[in-house]
Image 1 (cartoon, rainbow, N blue to C red):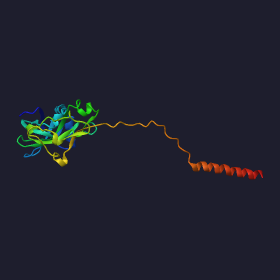
Image 2: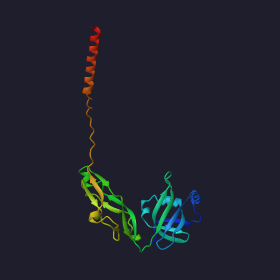
Image 3: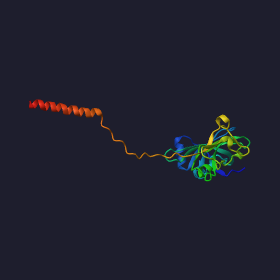
Image 4: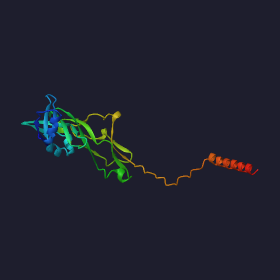
Length: 230
């Protein structure tokens, strides 16, 4: 079976920070291929091929045909490291797959009919995506592009949980689908209107002690003046 994603790789000969920097200047991304029954392979991937394909969200959860020399290896993406400042890819890890062995991958959730959602159209509610991707377990050939969730009948204060989602044949959730841990995926809620207080602030009353102090000061001054006159 040929994947829609194909990458070219070459065996990596030199290691270390200096070698890695040189490879990146040559538009090659250091990568590691992890195999279940074989030794790991250190390779280099063409950064232009990688950057072009990685723009597709499906690239992250689908089988990739990785051609290293004359050998084709079927892999899935395991991890990506990026430069924190420039955001370009500095290293990538692949996991070799066997078409006869189930694997665990994360796939995106595709929410449909949000515009015609009952809670939105009739009550002015808002649809909130609580989970945007989900971990599934299946054979590589059965990996779906996404998991579809229809929110059309969702009303105010209602949620859709994992146990309510119908999965394609051969696909199962890895966890979170028992009654005690049935995670909510999406919810429709009524937004709370912000109330702005336009009332004028109350005048700050002058402390009674201050007034009394002024009266005492006036009285004392008068007594002094009277004594001078006498």
